[in-house]
Image 1: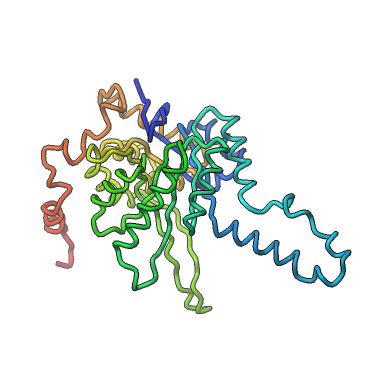
Image 2 (image 1 turned 30 degrees about the vertical axis):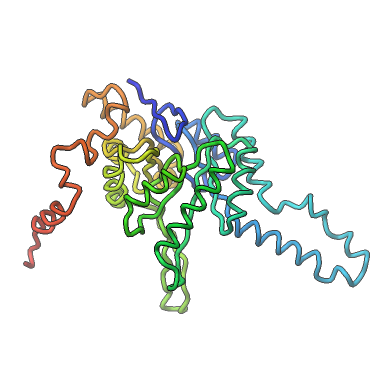
Length: 333
């Protein structure tokens, strides 16, 4: 049985990838994921805001009160030796790239154009086999148009692509007025892969303390539907690999994503719930299903139930929406 797959130009042993999470933020965690069977690992994201905050905080610490007594300067370490900036992240990336046999993909989330360029270059120099651009932005300015937001994405892809030689993936949100057109435009701009979809972590409101409360809930299998739809619609129609993420809990979700057309299937929540060893469960389940169904390779399985391959493509379109509504039965109606 041939489980190999190609993801944004990287040859992988199989299509199951450990996506960005606390597990992939340390060298030990990355090695555990490799030992558990991950075909590749996406490191936790490097956030430009955190680097800027650390640098600003240290500068303030050094400068405030330091002019009172000359001797006070000796209490502070040299700035170059202080662990601010991306150094720790890049060191883990470098060590992981040197000590593992699977591709280690860096993840980058920036707020400035120069940040995307500078840190992407440093990630390539540290040995990343690819970079996942995690553009996480909730546009709260009501005067910013959808066209401006889309142009920002395209500009980031072009800038990073012109800076590095390693492949780049773009982790997308589904909130575009024309998702298909945007995906096609991003691929044309140079994205080697699209990862569908990012999860926006919406805040809650604490009605006791009257505070906005940040919340984090792990994904569940029910969240597979939206990325499954768009992977099935995009498969074979854009010049970029497709990575599926969100809702992968069991082998069933891995199989469904591959049938829709995903090149790789990524998971985080199931590994945080069940531990890195759960990767073996996902892979064994995929193998067993392929054997019972007579699939000799992932390549023959991939996309066999995409929009263009099924006998009734309307199942992914408006006609099916009407049938779904008509089929629901409630005891109160």
